[in-house]
Length: 398
Image 1: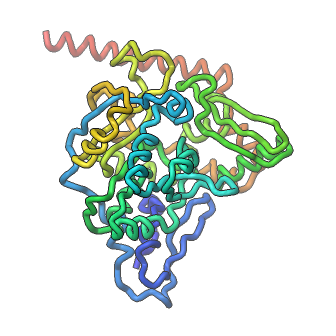
Image 2: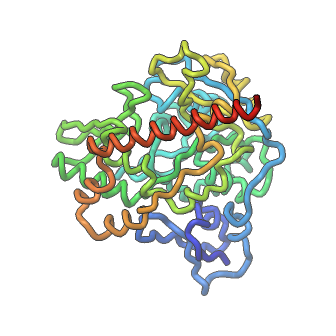
Image 3: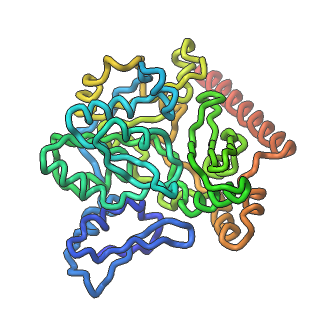
């Protein structure tokens, strides 16, 4: 019987919830807004399946996945799709290929209240809802059960999600299905749905209307300076970039990520999924001709299935071969989790007890002029230290 004692040991993937044969596991939301399994001991039959499928207790590894993924910079040749995607539009072209072969695609979308949930789709018209980043933990629901049903009926399935969600799926299935393809993300960590709910409420109060649309990656000011943008039912609009928007600032400062994210078991090579997608930050240092603030995806091909997928879609891609070391240099979350802020616990104490406007001011606001000077000074000191270390290293060798 699964029991959560250390919350950093639960990723919230819901594999245990999906596998339980007597439905005795409920997912209970804690004070930070993250869900954890709670077993009804009166119903539990002590089968142990919940522990067996847990990707934290039983780390998923596939010896068929490459120790060194094939690494590419790529984007969709369809400029319209590229513009409305988070980065280069690779997910869309893969999903279109799956759907064209009568397959099913699983990914993160919104419900009617802009809660982030996993959905399954079978038509290209529904792809828009899954396209684009959602910087909130997605509720898997019963997606693992649904995916298994389709796989057993011999339909192609593309399952996309965070690395821990993909690991949870594989542990749940406990079998290699040749008709299953998986895609994970270069994941920074999953923010609290409770904080996102509070932020939505804050925006709706401020603009006096319900949110009509929301985008975490509005690129009206370019790919590298993306914005969180919302449109409201009264016609008003809000948009601020990643250096100004409170929710994005708090997210990138790691204040309200799930506890397991700071000790992620799946920020590593080999990857869990057949392919890994992300933004190719730093691509211009490898290919200067791509330094135009246009969207470029990082594509890691991690398995033979991944190679097959790439071969199936490559006619629709612009693609440049790269190397893993360069990708990791600018995307370190490929191989290591983010650091936990020292005052994370204090953030949630304030979040649950103080006015949200005060929380924004303290934790989620752009740095002041004085704070910026401190940041620049620290960067200068670190640069000088690295330069001195390199000089000393050269002297030692000579």
